[in-house]
Amino acid sequence: MTGDKVTIVEVGPRDGLQNEKRIVSTEDKLALIELLAQAGFSRIEATAFVSPKWVPQMADHDAVMRGIPRRSGLTLSALVPNEQGALAAIQAGARELAVFTSASETFAQKNINCSIAESLQRFRPVLALAAARDIAVRGYVSCAVECPYEGPIEPAAARSVSARLLDLGCSEIAIADTIGRATPERVEPMLAEVLQAVPRRQLACHFHDTSGLALSNVDVALGHGIRTFDSAIGGLGGCPYAPGAAGNLATERLLEHLDRHGHVHGIDRDALAGALQMAQSLKENRSVRET
Ligand code: HMG
Ligand code: MG
Image (cartoon, rainbow, N blue to C red; front, side):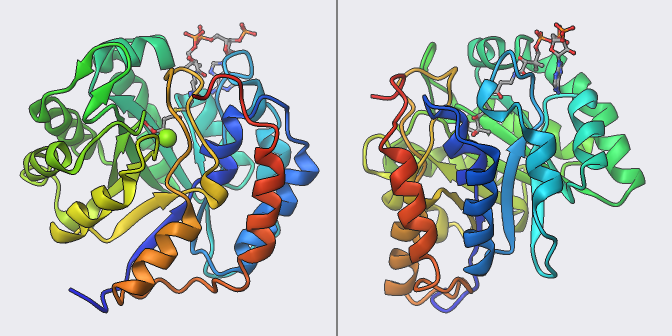
């Protein structure tokens, strides 16, 4: 198990910056992404092609996606809620898409203004567009353990939505603790259940770190053989439609943890210093929505 390659999906430019109170300039976003790319990430979620009325911080998605210099070995992805977003993201050069729904009905309504079943219908044309262009689509399952509106979520709900995303053609399921309230005791049965439907190589974990338990939850996932994790530089992050959702697991903490346990990740931690410094300066203007 030790020595295994772990892939990190850096989500700071999207999940991190979507929740900043101040609108971060396109120039700053591009500078942050460039610093991250220089540190060696193979996957960066760069922006979200969502409605600017819902998330004004991502309104410059087109300029961000088009403005990033392409490098070999780096896949730039975009979060998309529907066909409109997918078309725009592909036209702007996204090489991976991420659709997002939830294991909680109430959260789906609050975040994407539709039921879980409706969201899955909306994803069909997204998957078709992507398949025609050989573009991979990740499927997020928010609130896989805890919902800010419904409370605890049954593992069976996380499994069922994951299985439906896989059936639709998603190549990876990102199982998310949206508000960072999951404990290892609750992540364990949830993952055991989801893994009955999703092969471990196709499962990624996306932990927010509100309670400081994200690394313990990573350990549970590592124990299940999961080798893909999301994190955000400087612990940026949150979701505007999930009250109490603080930052994502900080990339620098995840890297340190993986190094300590002998996992290979391919990121140059020294080269990450510039990105970390920039993320920290952006964080000084932290969103008022965060706790
Ligand atoms: P709606 O209002 O129900 O949609 O929103 P609509 O189809 O009625 O469209 C309303 C307006 O939005 C129209 O414009 C559309 O053109 C426009 P208008 O005619 O009023 O001028 N529109 C779009 N504009 C740009 N890009 C698009 C798009 N689609 C419609 N793709 C919708 C439904 C899904 C669009 C909306 O609810 C939305 O954009 N929600 C996004 C919410 C969001 O981004 N949340 C944060 C990201 S999720 C997250 O952080 C969780 C995650 O990190 C995992 C975890 O931690 O759990 C991924
Ligand atoms: Mg998130």
